[in-house]
Length: 179
Image (cartoon, rainbow, N blue to C red; front, side):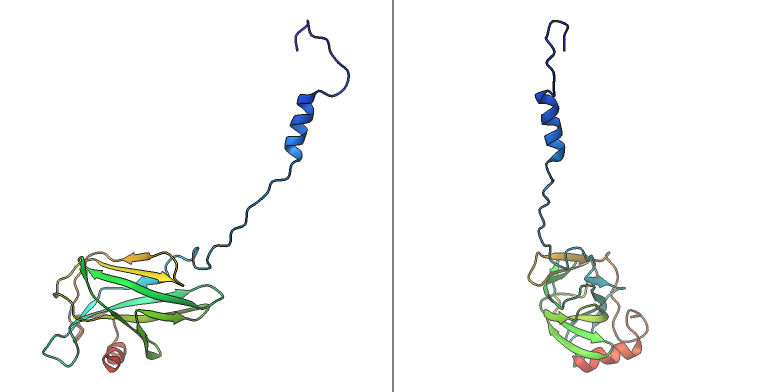
């Protein structure tokens, strides 16, 4: 205020406006997020993949990749594997085998119980070639947005023998029994 202005007794409009601004309650907008939105790593790939035998065996040509499935929510979820590529090549349909206890979970879409974590073998078939490369898994949870998990490019040794160390001998037997 300058010396030329006349001071009025009482509270100024500016002071009232400031007080009102501080007294207005903040309104929070609560938008429920899907339970899985804050849960990174529903599918985690563990180790290198292993090649399944080709035409020389009863088992089809493809790959087996070890992964961990984790549902940290209090509700069951449905995972749909939309696509799996290796070195840019589509690996086709995916079979999902639970490693312990051993059992077939189906193909591409499977249900995961609330608060559960378990290891699986993701089985592909009819691979275009036996090249090594980066694995990319695209999947959805309960029909939500597509999520991805990938690995660094690495070698995929044959599942028979000791060079495939992504699976134990018992897990290899489990895979063979479910194919």
